[in-house]
Length: 639
Image (cartoon, rainbow, N blue to C red; front, top):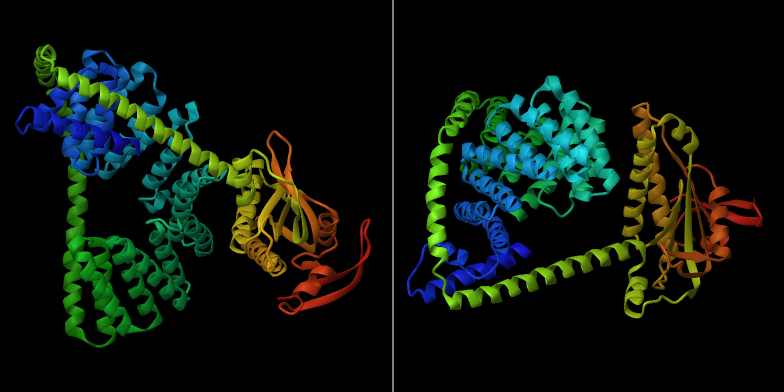
């Protein structure tokens, strides 16, 4: 990362300054040495801002100190963008220190500078940051006001990232009260549609997790599961995965599908344990205890609740401990162990008092927060005087320069530029490679990069699959264009997951038709089986999606699917927006297998049947006439 590069270089630079001075200087003194080095002041400010940013997680105190130095220098040279960024990073440092008054005040100053220079993105960012602080302090009205301002500004400039952030934050505010769940739903749905539109996996995971939680709280378990399962796919491999799994476990418990609930909570626990995210571990074990209790396995529920308390107490996870105490009190009462039942009932009442006090303190803290923020205004004039004194000191020290430091600073500048350029090129190359692999098969992409061209290949045996949606025209008349595209994207995204699982290459989509093939570009002997399995998975997915949409009274798609195996020619076509494609009679015949098939059936040709008949149960349909192909043996794959 470029931030770490800046940090490495500058920290070593400061260390050399200390050695030259034959003394151990403080960070502040070392920074003064850096500020006197022979590099342009604009570069110096940018370096200091990057260095401040790199200290966020390790040492927020140092981050604030460096950002303050950057701000002072930027003010001297009237570098307004540098001032705004220094204030932004200083506020983040205060926030990480828990100094929320200072954070809000500093971010307000940053907001003023961003307004002055016309940086709308910076303005939206500062409004959002302040809104997050007010939310944490319990002032939901002020938080909502700031997030709505941030959303409007982000929409005006078309900043997708900021729009997504604001929609999520606004939804979170509304999710705090049952009376406003519907409003939360409105904003989370908007964030979901935007995430789908930009195809950002993590944003999809966040929005679907939020939707799943909202529908769960509203009592709509079926819809909650749809979104939570989608969230699990998007969150795969991230530390947010246990959150979605635990909500799925809760849904299963409420639906009395206890084995599924237990399995899901255990999976969430194991992932949390591996990541060492102890709050997620606590939540997983509490959910497990609740599932065991609902199932009637009292002994297992008691063991789970005890484990949750053991993990949660060091974290002060009061909500989870409260649930565990309540579960233990009920469980022991069912076993007629009234001593323990009363013991945990007392602990439950005590922790409820603690939670009540926390909430009361939070409400009082909102008033105190506002008071302290206003009081801070009166200190600004004193800070300005102190700034003038420090600026005079900076000017004095600027006159005393060491030739060694100046020379080293030039080397530092070249090193920074070199590393920054190298990192930028590396990132761009990675992005270019990812885009290429999203368009072409890996082997073809590598050939194109190595030689500048990709040869056309004749392949003797390839299995080609076509799908087509029935009800597409009807759905397009009922759904809005945005809803129609979102539903097609949802289906095609699942198809992409399915063919990836089975090692099949996607060729293209044409409207509501999806085409893929197995056995290319790398030849293999399993492609007929892989493609048939993928076809069965696609049919199953569309049937499940149909059932879910029927329950909600929404229009749905049905699927025709056909497969044929034979020779093809494969290669890249065009010089602009080029694409990997396949040609030949096999492709045409596979298309006829789809159009001659039936809804919800995997229709295969006789050629494919001969290759897969020993592994699948197939029903001979007879010789079916296919357009422009005459009569062809066709089979339905039953399983």
